[in-house]
Amino acid sequence: MKLDPSAQARTDRAESLNDAKVRYARSVTNDIRSRAESTGAEAAKSADAVDREARFPTEAFLSARTQRLLGIMVPPTLGGEGARLSDVVDVCYILAQSCASTAMIFAMHQIMVAILVRHAKNSAWHNRLLRRLSNEQLLLASSTTEGMGGGDLRKSVCAVEQNDSRIALIKSATVMSYGEQADAILTTARRSADAASSDQVLVGFLKGDYQLAPIMNWDTLGMRGTCSSGFSLRCNGQIDQVLPVPYEKIQSHTMMPVAHLTWSAVWAGIAAAAVERARRSVRAAARNAKGPVPGATSLTRATMSLRALIGTLTSALSRFEEIGAQEHELDSLDFQTTMNLLKVNASEMATSTVMSAMQACGLSGYRNDGEFSVSRHLRDVLSSSIMINNERILANVATASLLIEVPHSLRD
Image (cartoon, rainbow, N blue to C red; front, side):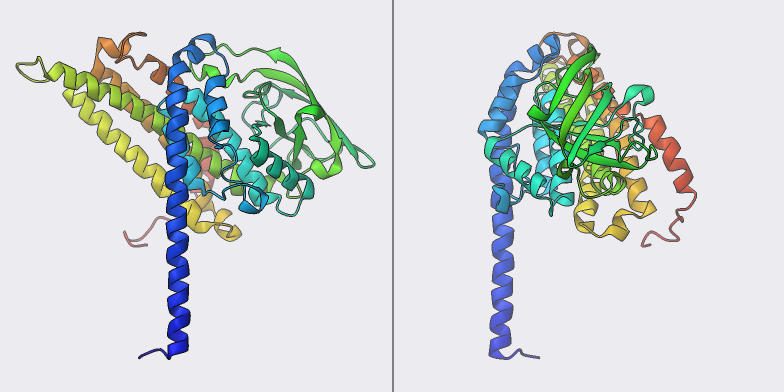
């Protein structure tokens, strides 16, 4: 059946518009990737010093600001580029190959940006924050860990105290990554003094709205440059700084899946850097080997493990982007379980990959110095299983898994 000329013309215009959108998206992605590679090259220069001194990667974030990477997800109407989450995940992967701390800070920042973009569309205060973020390349931090309760993000001790249009809160933030270097902080709290611990809101505060008093330092095995010290956090602001959406929805629809996707990209990037060092080490050994090449089998194992990790990550990312804002899909047990297990599986696969890379390098990989050292990579990737502890996630998933039906065929 042939379309009439006018209908055919409308179809042609729609296809042309769709093609233009695809070409634009690809050009944005390629441009962002090129800028990320420039920042990654800058981050690599100071990565060892950042790790050794447990200091903030100042040079890398000067470059990130110069390359305008911090606001890529902000909508064009607010001065950003409207980049997709897949672009952000790609940047995390690229940066992590140079400096894991830089990549993790970037990931944590973008989780907060994603929350504002998805859940504060109708909030004038938060839209102004996004516009400033894009224009000034502000760095956002988060404060969700409180007291000794650690990783239970769905409970808060502190509460928002309201007096007319003014609000205040005091929080024992025992772990707050790059808190002193951030330009703004988003923090969880109980909705009010008489609210249940799980009745939470997320509140944004600019640097002038809060004071930090150190209570715990940050001297760790790896991820030393994230500067995740503990602080007493005292905040004052306006009631419109509270996000209009309950934190329960923010956490399940955006914070958890975006965190697990971006973190997994960071760990994959660490693993990729270790595998590349192992590849160069084995190639160097092969030039002098008269028999079996030392490390070749471990390199094969590391390479295949990295490919499996990337496949797991890209599959989960595709699913999240396909779902978009479909709340019934985001709330489904199947999706929530998949995203939680992504974090567990990615952390385990990344650690296994780096270990295999170290085996491939042998003693030169075990050393703290030398071009084939993967010491820093191993120390950094070991943090992956305890950033929201895998055991806690698996315990929470265990109950939900009882309600998920087993597929009856491979096509279900």
